[in-house]
Length: 144
Image 1 (cartoon, rainbow, N blue to C red):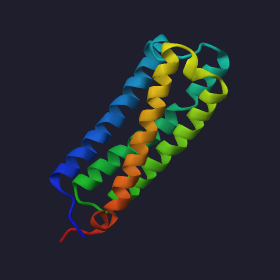
Image 2 (cartoon, rainbow, N blue to C red; image 1 turned 45 degrees about the horizontal axis):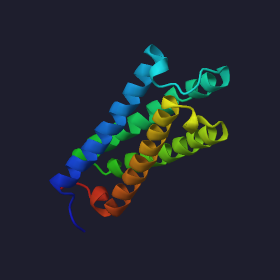
Image 3 (cartoon, rainbow, N blue to C red; image 1 turned 90 degrees about the vertical axis):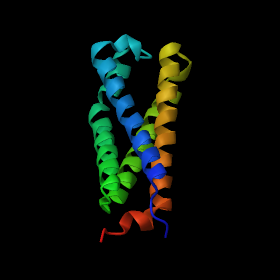
Image 4 (tube, helix red, strand yellow; image 1 turned 135 degrees about the horizontal axis):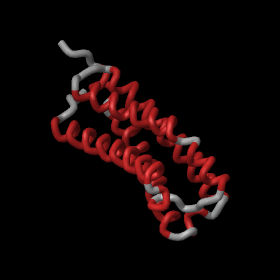
């Protein structure tokens, strides 16, 4: 079992920061300048998007707690990485299916933003899951 290196911790911290910054930026824009990120203005679309803030907040909390736990050498880092990665994959699946069913990705700039967010969610979520699983022994090792 190899210990987690400082370079790996930096990569994890950077990935976590990207995830949290994107979440905060998206929801800030959604509630203050919706036109910057919305791909549609229909009631159904707005209702759909308005169902995500709590789930996205959970994802952000998982990522934040994961990074903090791993950096502190706490075994709970594995739990939070797996919870956050799983939450992200689930959110990607829900969002992508809606977008595919409603032609969101081909609806102009908003659709491209949505596609980018969906792909980033999937890539980061799978990365967190893989990172955690391949380092599970090191993550579960208790200090001392």
